[in-house]
Structures are given as structure tokens and as C-alpha cells.
Image (tube, rainbow, N blue to C red; front, side):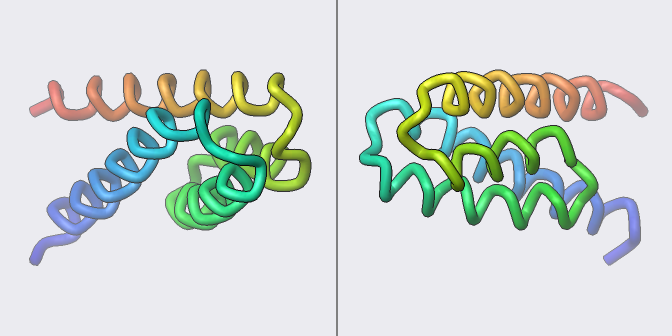
Length: 90
């Protein structure tokens, strides 16, 4: 597998995780929010998506704060939009 293909595969896995968290975090319990945020934080840091990771970290530490949830959702949306733009490049 080439480096470019591996990069895309890793980013696609993170995109799937971000999308899943994005869809489920609003209705999750605080404990589940913290767990989802923890996993997303590590994956995002691993690829350099630090804004997404920082938002996940805040939600992990204080899962009951709705502003943290909203920021995480916005960061996930921005990350997914960024990846969508990459897919359009040759």
C-alpha cells in the first residue's frame, strides 16, 4: 500500500469515527459522551487534527457542558468538510 493510499485510509477511518460521534453525541449520556470523546481525541491527535482533538478533550473532561458538545459537532463538521475538499483534488 502506498503512502498516499495509507493516508487516505487513515483519514477515512477518522472521518467515519467523527461522523459516528457527531450523530450520537447529542443523545448520549454524559458517560457515553466522555467515552466517545476520548476515542475521537486520540484518533484526531494521531493525524494532526488538533482542533477536533481539543474539542473532544473539552467534552471528555466536562461531558455535561452543552457548549463543549456543540463545539465538537462544529469541529467534526469542519473536519469532514475539509476531507471532502481533499477528495476532490486529483
